[in-house]
Image (spheres, rainbow, N blue to C red):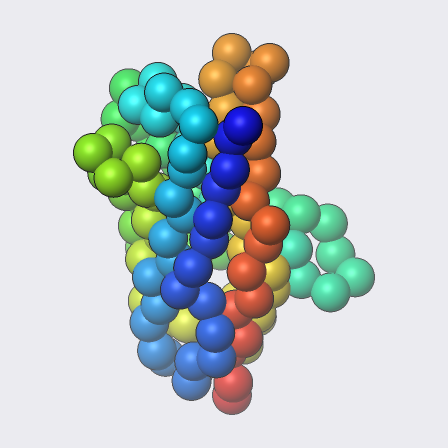
Length: 116
């Protein structure tokens, strides 16, 4: 059974930093593409950052330069470090792991709130 457990969210002040973690179990983690998405109230879920199994990364324009996605295959964990946070970064953040379009798993989501 695949399980994704997210942690590291919470309340942070404008300009602050947070690192989100998502630890997976029940899969061969190293072959999966990893991503973080976010969904603000009343909005669709959008891609924040993606890290493929070959090491290539993509970032949403809104967080490019302020975020870093990384992985630890030894710990089955994907991280999202975010800096210079703004109130508009407030959302529920979800980790996503995917392999071959068939195996597609989501975390339960974790709240990030940035106060102004």
